[in-house]
Length: 252
Image (cartoon, rainbow, N blue to C red):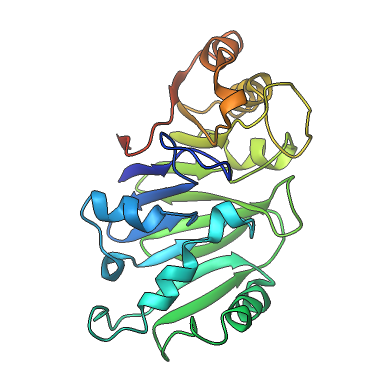
């Protein structure tokens, strides 16, 4: 299993950090979120639209979903999109309505052909277990928006957890327990402000309580990375700790 960081930034446009997106490559190619220009990042590493098997959407903020628009638009072009197996999109309940409104805004031009995608709406309950390709997946609501979900992916004794956007909450601690890799946001420079994002001390406490093996810190605003992030986290968390960079690859 390999993780590639496609975007380690936020909704604030930057040259050095793309909007959120992560590729988990196993027997399938799974995208975790699909912010602006994630597709372009995929092309840089040799992954085309036709190679995408599944997409997980953590919540419906623009910096996590915007590249769904060009993706769905491109699937309508027979001259380029030849995939015949459906792409499964996993998101919280309410996603079908969200997608319908988005398609309405674009006057029906992002309505995919029949069979191109399959929507799987996930219930907003703690530790919901389901199969996602060759993974056993577990989702749980986290502290950000009503539809926000974090996800845990397990395969052959290994576990990867993606927090999406979240504030400090027991749910992410429980989901991340013993994970080999925790991909976690760190958007705040000050603890608790705002409460629906994380500061370094909160990230450290989550990782320490959950006893994760490797911590990948991501989702940086300009003001939230120039504050000694690693140093502040390492005061409390003694495990392996990495700052995400675009196109960074990690073998799990």
